[in-house]
Amino acid sequence: MSLNQNAAALFARIGQMLELTGGDRFRVSAAAKASRILKGLTEDLGPIAEAGDTKTLVAIEGIGKGTAGKLVELAQTGTISEHDELAAKIPAGLMEVLGIPGLGPKTVKLMWDDLKIESVADLKAGIADGSVEGLPRMGAKTIENIVAAIEFMESSGGRLHLGIARPIALRFVELMKGVQGTSRAEFAGSIRRGEETIGDIDILVATENPDAAREAFTSMEGVSRVLASGETKSSVRFGIGELGGRFKDLSGPKEVQVDLRIVPAESWGAALSYFTGSKDHNVALRKVAIKRGMTLNEYGLFNNSDDPGDPIACESEAGIYAALGVDVVPPALRQDRGEFTDGHLPHVIELGDIKSDLHTHTVDSDGKMTLLESATIAKSRGFHTLAITDHSKSSAVANGLKPDRLLAQIEMIHAFDESFNGLTVIAGSEVDILVDGSLDYDDDLLNALDIVVASPHAGLRAKPKQATKRLLKAISHPAVHIIGHPTGRLIQRREGLEPDMNEIIAAAVEHDVALEINAHWLRLDLRDTHVRAAVEAGCKIAIDCDVHQPGDYDNLIYGVLTGQRGWLTPELCVNCWDHDRLHAWLRSKR
DNA sequence: GCCGTTTTCGGCCCGACTGTTTTCAGTCG
Image (cartoon, rainbow, N blue to C red; front, side, top):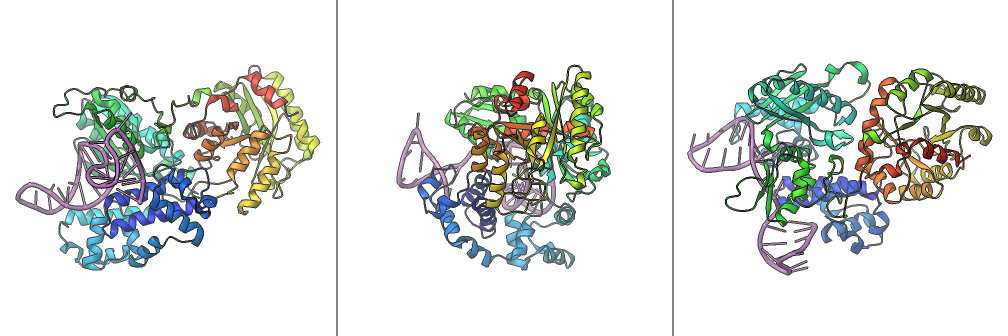
């Protein structure tokens, strides 16, 4: 594990443990912030911290002297003494109790101090024997909520994938739009920002009939429990099983919390901005407001005075950003990763900019569609180019093509292309990058292909140095256009390779190779922070759906959101190029 | 613990909901 990820986990834990020991709340949030920042960095701080270079470390926003010192300590000794000291005082099971929704540090500390509750099991026993009931402010209703929350936590195995949560959010939005009196409905929160995993779903509604909205929301089919139903906010648990069996092999949450916010139509923009977040972005945005003598809340942007009067801006997000004198920040960029400090924002890619898919499979390997079926969908989406890239011979389980079958397929695709007016279909392959970095076909065959996507499929537990070497060798092969899902990670399932991304990106720039954002929501590989580093280096990026079945084309949005989160522009994304420019680039490797 | 157009001290975003309270604490986002 890299120092960043290791440190991020430790600081997150330090923050939680400080809460439980009654530490200063600003120190708590500083530790949590340090954790988030470290998670989002692209450059590994390992060598810097090991060298004791605190000057470079404190230059990072949110990292001060204290955190820098602990990073150095971690790099040099393998541990942070503050963490170990806290961990010695706090039972491990207590952290799990803190994870129960609705239970915060105050309550957990009280239970620990007064009742010696040190685990979820202790808490259950304390509820059963009535001792928890004896605590101050602990009534029957609160205990009922804790029992339900424990059940929820035990049935939910972590966060939801974006590709599962977003369709649910869209269903809620459609439902709310159909309720009488609704003028606007939209999802906000982490789904709108395109985060790769989702904690809960936020739905925003502007309506003349709040009671009808609330009623429709809490009684939607699939709602298993109503947690709250107030004037402006309702919360429910929604059963994911209702979606059917397509994701049944995915271990994950069985339920998700969905929040409905009913907001005044006139402050729609302020509310949408507020509930889209991220939290860090909101804090940064409010600081911009404060600097300008204004106050920002979910109702609007106001002058800072005793009698603020009418808002300066509130109806649209764009109006609020404009009134604050900053660029409008697309939702995916709202991460507090420099969107206010790096001058003007780039024009990031949008779904409509994508004009080709360069990584798709057919029935010839492990796809479910024929060439004709896939090409028909590609054409209906307005693409000018479709690359067929079935698996190579070593991917036996995926029915990879032996050389003779590939030669026959190339011939077939080239014949097909002439008959499918308006869409150029090109012959390619998703060629395995073998463990030693060599490719799965000989050079003559590779050069017979219009496009080569080289991807790692096996040996994904290799050490970082070996992984770097392997990918560098593939990148330097003159026939390769794109490196497919470069790390091979599966979100919440498999870590994948951890190569030195800076070296990979530099090599890709040197050899004119594009790195892929695989748009499948289980992959999103490259991930957002890697994309950001690649974009900063001027590296070409491909966004492809890795199509196996018809619905996979719909995954494109997840790839685009990931690109946006990495500040990707159409100029650097080969799928956004027009026909002639794309094909000139492809031919330049032949 | 972090930070600085009030710069090495003294602040640190802001409001809703619940459940338990007679005015508010705790939690969440």
